[in-house]
Length: 308
Image (cartoon, rainbow, N blue to C red):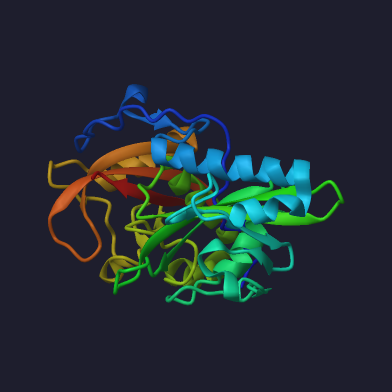
């Protein structure tokens, strides 16, 4: 599998998600005001910001105090461990040092840890922390205590160097977190990098539900600039078909919309009405698209957020 550094979804700077595309009637030219070019990013939801601060505060504690802070991380009822909210600590080889929910089994190497879909989350945690930014997000399905069925969990990890020079990975997660625009943009950017590296060979990874390109109701699609669907793992029956004249529930020529936006701006957010995977009723979807060079032709890579 390609290096997971392309797949993790790290924090960048500030992104302001404004209004998206208006209808583009067939035969009419869209104006620049119809689209919102991609910009810097920020987290929109308080829950996300709280989790990031929590992990960063734990990271700062390790940078100041090293392993001497680990007992505090394990103490139930402390600021570091309250119910489902806790921090875990690994080294960069995957050896676990702190895991408050299960102290008797705290030690062990977790580098080969996978979720129920076979997603290699242990390796993804390590790659996220080892990357240039020293931080990142991993989304996967896990069993929440007391629930019989696995649900989605989003974990944020940060690299921390202790005073003695030892490097750790610090993380914490939240079940059923709302999907941030930043998660989507980085999924598309990771897919774009993979396509540029592997060409059409990357299609198998983009379709693989154990890959980082599947999380919550989010997936990555690939469309040619003339509207042929190359990859659509949520709606595989569409692959190989021309979608250029497809309209959404409001009559918008959505494929023409996002092709125009990506070709015009390189990257942009658009909106249209589309069913969630496994359903038929369309809901509003905000989609991020990029124009990417694959071999000797341009393609459009995109992914979106369904309105709650």
